[in-house]
Image 1: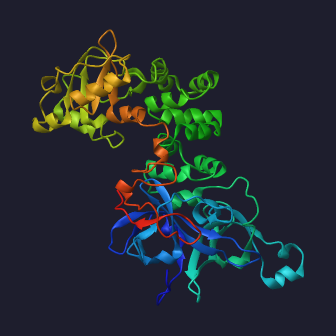
Image 2 (image 1 turned 120 degrees about the horizontal axis):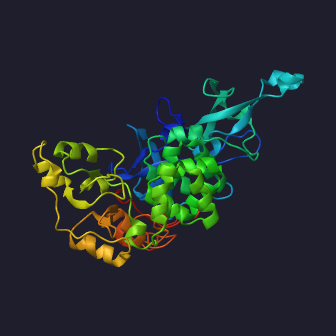
Image 3 (image 1 turned 90 degrees about the vertical axis):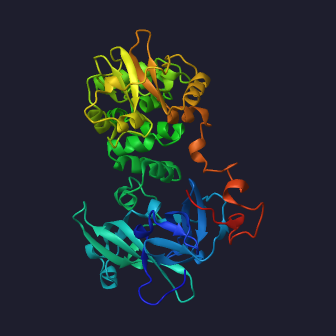
Length: 459
């Protein structure tokens, strides 16, 4: 990044989640963090570059490749860069992930430091942001820190020079995460989960503690199973039960299935009975069957409900596209397990009917429902044969007990660690030449961070 006329200081929280564009204006990825190296004494940290998320893969972009921040995006000077997965080195520090929310000491003025007594001790403050700017030599440094004096959000925020604070090199216990989350508050759950995946276990636990139950539940559903278990295990038992209640019953059942039986039972007992009941029913089924994959909360309607009511139900923002694709018509009761299943209505058919039409008159009765013990290969063939994104699951009494969606099936067909690999990744260190356009070898970036290739178009 080269210095330009006018203000050139950039605050790191402003960079969080910004688009990264190549010289042609094509999207490369999004900024996840700013990488710096701390130096001895009160020397400000030197900025090394940016951690950029590209198709679920974090890569390193040297600060020398960045020309500026324009119209809400980071612009690169070249489309050629290293596509090797970014791995943080011992001498490197992530500004957003590791410095925000740290409690450090704001030093008193020099005159007070030499006077001794209480005035020379400094005040404990919380870091809320940090600013980077270029030097005359073309390097970039982290020269200023925004800190909150006092506890809580009402504390005064000051911007001070790096040499006016101390304590960044000391181990931090109980670091909060409010400012980190504020920087990424607009991220989708899958993107926030990707961010958490690249944090240390300690920092993940701190972020989990700062998230509300609903947001944490959404993020847990996007994490690899081992990290789900780790984060849930780090919560107090009562809060873990609350988070499980906020998850979909199928996701909660999958997570509890990874825990020891006695621990899973303890959490189930702490859940509200009406929330635990559908989870217990799902835990009965084998993981690779329709019963083990299904969700027990589809859109269920009575036959005398109108098309207008059905369309209103599928508009609910919390529904996944697969669950919103069709409604299921049954006799009462209307909670799973329902009364006798009558059929399903696709939302495209609903769109073609007058709003006052009864859904009982537009249902499809030709699609054979699945049984709870239907194995995964047969479920896959069933969805493919009928071009379905979801299929009903009935018990022996003909009651609707759940729905298997195509995303549930994909979760079971893909490798268990699929969330840890970007689109097109063939291995842990490299990228698929056919997808990312990475040549087999090239000139390494400074520091030996891997091959150089042209930027792929981000999805």
